[in-house]
Image (cartoon, rainbow, N blue to C red; front, top):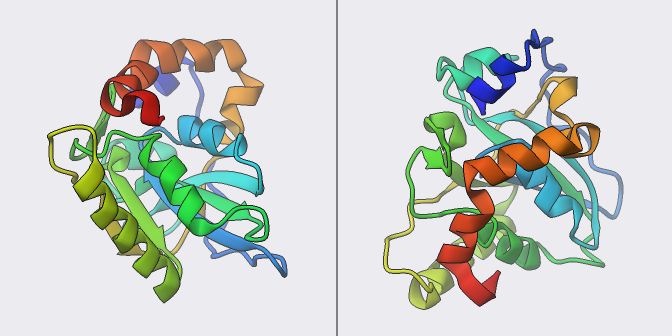
Length: 200
């Protein structure tokens, strides 16, 4: 994705200030790393009960990282999507099911055509209940997965979240033709079908 962004001739603007933004009463938050955050946003925006999705960075060592530094693997961050959802409409466990089937959990530091640690897969949990649910979902998947390769996706406590530059937010809506071309040429859906088949 880094080379794709560079080809567009954009100069990334600094991200918004770091925070774990406040969650409105009655809502909850989930944070997933699944490769290109444009695609993760697009996948989760379709889920009933998801209120909002925000692309950003977490899991690194540098405050207020810029996209160009994250993509160059200078900060240790992963591309992530912060999902605000209504637990009365969709449970965290259901989001985990969507997450697993929207990624390739068999590749380390890579998703589809994007290689490097920013594109690793990880579940960043916000409390003990989420951590337990994530571990349970991983254990169930290890028993029932439809592929032979081991699962390398990690489960980690959520840390500081940095919102990505504005042009990354809702990229699939703002640039639908470019997004569809990127997703197809990256082979994301073809690989997901190969991995998950009818389970997707």
